[in-house]
Length: 100
Image 1 (cartoon, helix red, strand yellow):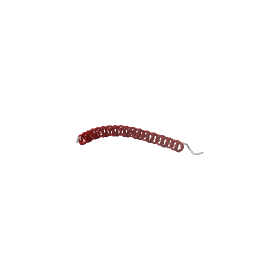
Image 2: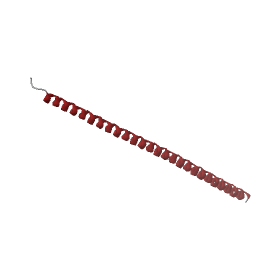
Image 3: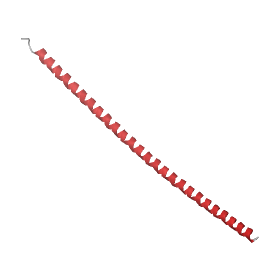
Image 4: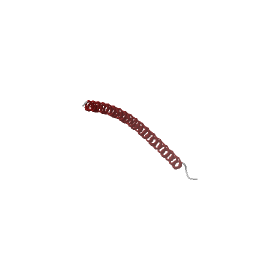
């Protein structure tokens, strides 16, 4: 009878220890999940910040490109107008000179 009581006590202790281990393991798993989630959120936040910075840089580059294109267009127009004025002046000069 004593043996059965000892056996039952050992079994109860074993079950209690197993329950404690399972509880501790569950707590570790939950902590690990929270850490993983926090890490993933930090990565997503960092990626979003990088994407925002990339878009801002792209917008600045596009703006600068547009400004360069507009300046180039103004320079081309000014050059064409200067050429046209020069040609007109030459035409007038040639028209006013008597033939030889």
